[in-house]
Image 1 (cartoon, helix red, strand yellow):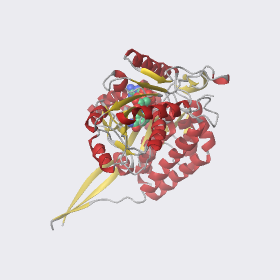
Image 2 (tube, rainbow, N blue to C red):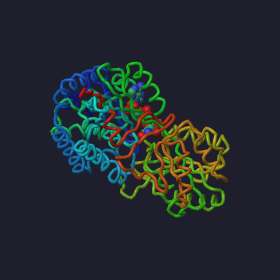
Image 3 (cartoon, rainbow, N blue to C red):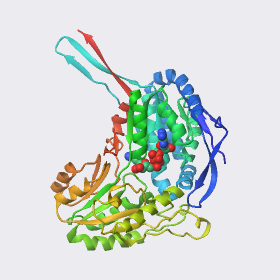
Image 4 (spheres, protein in one colour):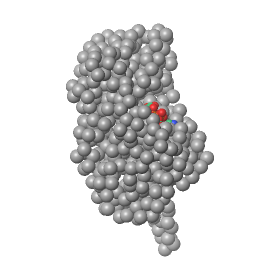
Length: 479
Ligand code: NAD
């Protein structure tokens, strides 16, 4: 199967006619080919977006909303096909794709489609002399670049608010997971999205992504991916005074106090550690446990980790699938080796896993739990982004806050205690943009989402996402 770019409302081969192999990570074999597009394809996409912008930006909100709701409906109608595509591309369990990724992609469109029907603007009276009102207008052409871990989920998390705001888009999914974005093109056409409003250019970051970021006609870049890539993108976009939203890496703490609801905490900490093979930017990979319950927690955590069913992602009972690519598989394994070199004790996992049958060449790593590492070693400071977590005991609240805040990242944290006063006090001191008290990944799309420190700049979600894609003007009327 040869995938194509979606430019000006139709599928087009890359101008270079060259393709990259797309690998099914559970099988370890090539199953499709992704356009290896270049700056010339991006140029075609920009021209299409420019032509579409005057009409789309003036299309009434109710009409934009109607089209976006239709896209949401079509995503839901195609749930089976999209979930299968997502699972094949990423190696994630089909059940996860069906229950989380694809429904959330539909929800993203639904959320922003309805939000624009309820917007309002500000007005400021200046004594009796003037009336100021705020006019929000779509910023123009925008670039949306997304990663491989939650492909359609995160791609649409950017595209939906940009379309709702009235912008035209040049978007790039990850070259490792192009399939659902490819399928979205046809859905948009069926839903009646005018040609050129959304353009999807497939290919490599350093070619297609770079061309989008550097293009003078593109006014804003919404990027989700690694911190190093985000840094590079900022260095290209900032001197051009582009608006930037950066959602980057994480190294999130799970903080377990002795007075937590034990069963619920262990269960959720396991889910937070290993969902999507630990490849969610929000996964809790550093688990700090109050010393008095450390051994009890460790025993229960290991038992529940070992009970997770790992295997062929296409099997509906599979809970842990394959790592996304061979390169990432080796990266995660190298961190397991590093942990050993740093004195870590492997409590379970720590090895590759052979899945019999068609998956015998797949990139499987057994969920890995490690202890005996200091909070400031590399294993506990660097983002691994795989099914590898560390357990560490703590004695005091001050100590665990120091551990939690010790990394360069500040994306998410979860805190487990039945003492609500303590929970709020600790939450206020943790340097993370997203904090869950006694839960994990409980999302309300109206809330601000994003990271502090090297986890990003700006917030997605709710009005903040719509605002990002708009230019704000103050109009002052003398009375
Ligand atoms: P990545 O940075 O390698 O790639 C992300 C996207 O950027 C891809 O589409 C890639 O092709 C593109 N890209 C690469 N180089 C580029 C360049 N020079 N210019 C423009 N685009 C370029 O990240 P990844 O490996 O795909 O994803 C994993 C990372 O994403 C992890 O660090 C994870 O924490 C992070 N992430 C963050 C969030 C969040 O919301 N904060 C969510 C998911 C993933």
